[in-house]
Length: 193
Image (cartoon, rainbow, N blue to C red; front, side, top):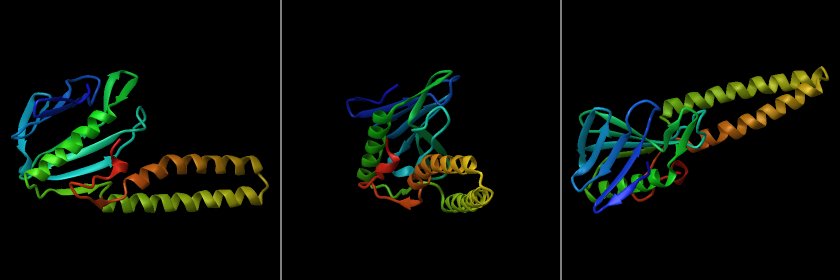
């Protein structure tokens, strides 16, 4: 289910779960049209109050991005960069997702939108993640020192290997999801596939 262009409309669709219908989105002259399950609506571009871009890997897809779009007066929809294909396969839709979001931002800018554009996690959530990582770092350093003092070199190698793997996996998530604001013409590249 890749994004496609037809005339002046740009569309994108993905399956959020294996069971259920696809989430379909279309950028029309009037606004953002969406169909999710049995619900559908059209949000004018100037009614969209906020967009938050983030990097959200999951076990089945380590390269997954998310856009949360909010409407003035209530309502929020999520747009994901992956789609369920089978019980064991979640397929990336990088190009369609990226093209759709770039076009959405362009149309909102053209409509004179004053939406709040943010990237990454919320500031409190990000601070909690950093605090947890600092606590984990102290605990791992303590285990490493203890293993060195008692001469357990296999344990030292295990701790170093685990720390390197953890830093590689979690470091990318933390780096990409740093809270920040952006503008319609400067979308954060690290949060688009």
